Length: 275
Ligand SMILES: Cc1cc2nc3c(=O)[nH]c(=O)nc-3n(C[C@H](O)[C@H](O)[C@H](O)COP(=O)(O)OP(=O)(O)OC[C@H]3O[C@@H](n4cnc5c(N)ncnc54)[C@H](O)[C@@H]3O)c2cc1C
Image 1 (cartoon, rainbow, N blue to C red):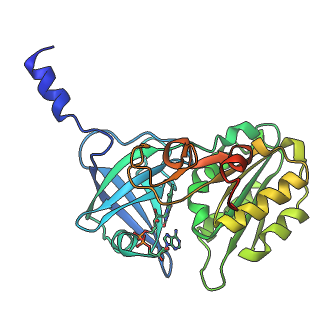
Image 2: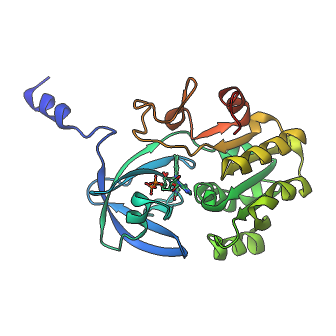
Image 3: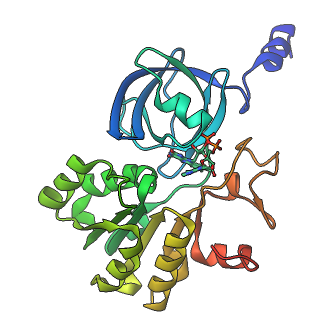
């Protein structure tokens, strides 16, 4: 190894070093939620899989985990949809076109929606939980002919508003999605009303814990295998690489073993607490 190699290795950015990305577009989705499109100042756009998250760093404020909501096609900017609930998310949501933010990642497991090919694909989203599902929804749109039914159950709290409303209309009208929208409490009931083949259904769900718990139990009770019910566990994460322990749940580190888990994987992890 030459001195140059040693120097390069010693200064190479690791997974804890944020890369600077510029905000190239910003869209206000609801009163407290915005979508940012990002491109790297230097180097290649990051490659990622649907369901994964990045750590976004608002300089001088802090860093949070944020799922990727779009940008899967070559040349597209990385997209994140963020709800303004605290200091860091506020700084990100209020950033403007031209601002620079730090980005680490991608981290975590993915949805693997293509496991549903030949069968039914069901998306269950609560509030901001639609954002992490969007890349897989868009994949289902692109490959619509490979699925039987595609169902979207989407709930939000009263007054919270709905995300991507123009796209949802397109998915329903032009791509044959079955869409049920309503207040969050009604999601489980919508699930039980749906017609689908339990043994040929893959469900991807993201939202508040209680919503996912009710949805998962309802589906498993109707005969959907637990392995085919996948849930994103969006709990407090700091390092993203399984070192700091903030997101540890029994033997699992949610940032590397998750955030996407099957219901079968989660049941033993959550044995002493509800979902
Ligand atoms: C894997 C993963 C993916 C995530 N993806 C997204 C995403 O795509 N978009 C997004 O907006 N957030 C996402 N989050 C949540 C995000 O990481 C932060 O937890 C959240 O933005 C709050 O951070 P903060 O520092 O702004 O507020 P904090 O100061 O940490 O919290 C302020 C207040 O808001 C409450 N709060 C924290 N998180 C939420 C929340 N998600 N909804 C409602 N109230 C909350 C806290 O309990 C506290 O009372 C994700 C989290 C994880 C672990």
